[in-house]
Length: 63
Image 1: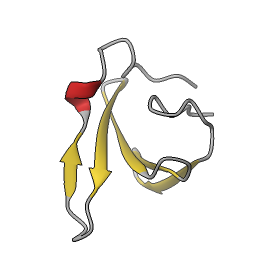
Image 2 (image 1 turned 135 degrees about the vertical axis):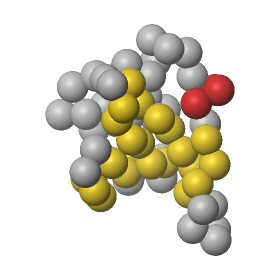
Image 3 (image 1 turned 90 degrees about the horizontal axis):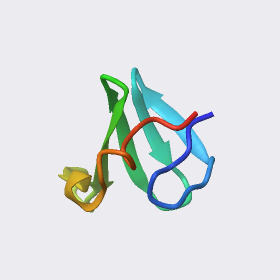
């Protein structure tokens, strides 16, 4: 089970191929080469990257 790097919760839903959504802190996670790309969903539906707020180790996939 995937763990959110932001809130460390496991309340993650799958929204697409290699795309997930944290229902606890409302961020979108995408998997690329065993690393997570982390995005905030804006009010207009666009995504803003949050990758710069996390280290490489924090972005490693934790199952």
